[in-house]
Image (cartoon, rainbow, N blue to C red):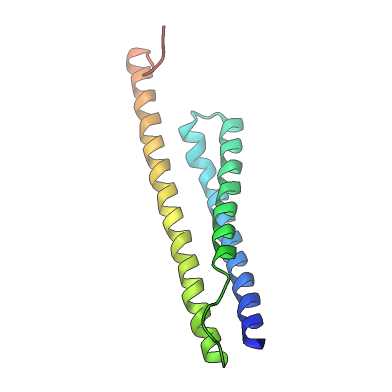
Length: 131
C-alpha cells in the first residue's frame, strides 16, 4: 500500500507541474499568433487565449486524473519508478501532441488571416463578407 501512495502523490505532483509549465509557456507565447490571426484585436485575442488555456488545463488534468489508477502490484521502489516513467511519459506525449495540434491550427488560421488581409489590401474585399 505504501508504494501506491508514493506513486500517486509523485505522479500528481509531476503531472500538475508539467501541465502548468507547458500551459503558461503556450499562453505567454500564443498571444502573438492570436493577435495576428484576429488582425490586432487584442481583446478578442486575449479572450481566446484564456479560453484555450482553460481547455488545455481541463483536458490534460482530466486525462491525468483519469489515468491515476495503478492496476499492477508494486512491491519496491523499482516498480514505482517503472510505473511513473510510463505514466509521466504518456502525459508528456499527450501534452506534446496537443501542442503540435494547437500550432497546426494556429498556422492554418494565420494563413487564412494573411490571405484575407492580402485580398483586402489588393481588392478592398473580405472573403465571405456580404455586401
